[in-house]
Amino acid sequence: MRWALVKVSLAVTAMVVVAFAVPLGLVIREMARDRAFAGAEREAAAVAPALSITTDRDQLARVVASAGSDAGMAVHIPASGAQGAGVDIGRQRATDEDIAAVRELGRASTTEVPGGSTLLQPVALSSGEIAVVEVYVPESEVTNGVGTAWAVLAAVGAALIVGSVAVADRLGVRMVRPAQRLVEGAHELGEGKLGARVPEEGPTELRLAAVAFNSMADQVVQLLANERELAADLSHRLRTPLTVLRLNAASLGDGPAADQTRAAVEQLEREVDTIIRTARDAKPQTAAAGPGAGCDAAEVVRERMAFWSALAEDEGRKWRVAGADRPVRIPVARADLAAALDALLGNVFRHTQEGTAFAVDVHNGEDAVIVLVSDAGPGIPDPEAAMARGRGSGSDGSTGLGLDIVRRLAESTGGDVRIGSSVLGGTEVRIWIQLDGRAAPVRRGHRGAVRRRRQPRSASTFNRSRSLP
Image 1: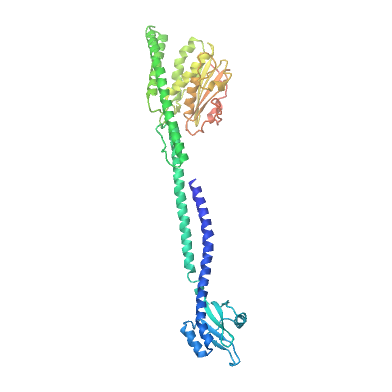
Image 2: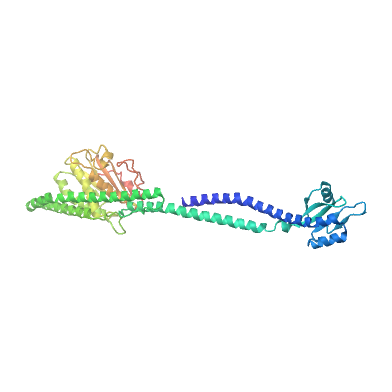
């Protein structure tokens, strides 16, 4: 917008300067010409009284010399009856035809001669004849002061153009700078800097936009604060049933099942404490993980599968882990990945019958890591509805928040989540975790629609048949 205003101002001012300066320059040239010939007419008029009194050559020569223009003035007196030949005083520059035409017409005229122009002024003599006074006007007198006037006009025009461009630039800055601050504030707010505000200045429309932006930012901060308080309150309410569970687990005695139950209760207490501390924190962690941050996905998968294996053995489920034998670094916090795996594995145990097999596969590509959780259950009839937060799968006790946790984990790295059919005959949830963080932003027509992307080279192994032990 700033450069557009400058260009428009430059074009308009240039047209105005041309429209006024060119005619004014022509008028100045004509005024200089008229001034030069007006001086020539005055010189000719100074000789006319002497011509009306005498035609003596010597006397007329003295009159011409006293006028101070003997080098540029000539007098042409025609021959008469008393005088056999005409009298010519001074240097003749006009042609005889021009002089004869002026004498015949009886009115003054100008004619072009080498180096300038001449004014031919007729004067009536006492004898009734017509004498012609010739006054030479050099070209330098005709154009005297014209060049200086044109230079002044050009300087004034240039100054007008420069001034208009400067004013347009300042006006553009006054309009563009508030818009840029509004854009910067929107980017900062989108990056999680909740204290971002925009100065309410500039034109009226931009001031109103800044007021609306600041009001929106205040509402966002208030909504987030309310959400944090609600999450902390709900988590705090879990403390009482957790205390009962811990007491009951302490009375179970010894044995693997009792130890696993007590470990699960302790882990649940730690998770609840983490939720409360995070919810009470006034500075949400929205920045991307820095270099060296993240966890070993293979280690987390092995740990969570070891936890769920005890329940799988009790229910007679076959299970398998693949691709977790080597370290696989991902830019995700260990607790977040563990929560996502627990959500998916918990769905397997909750929504499939006992004895249903399941598997977890880890595939490490060049630019992404994919974690597959598949089962041999009945599958999900509407994957898009299952991905919608709060809707769940339609089963009792399903809120849909588990898949939402998984999706937010993947999208925090630029990846996504897909639900499809597994080779085991049931559901397959594919978590795409981007490693370089340069993935395109998610484009959704609704919350369940997921964008398409290219697969890493190691993805060729994804569709191979997988068998359980």
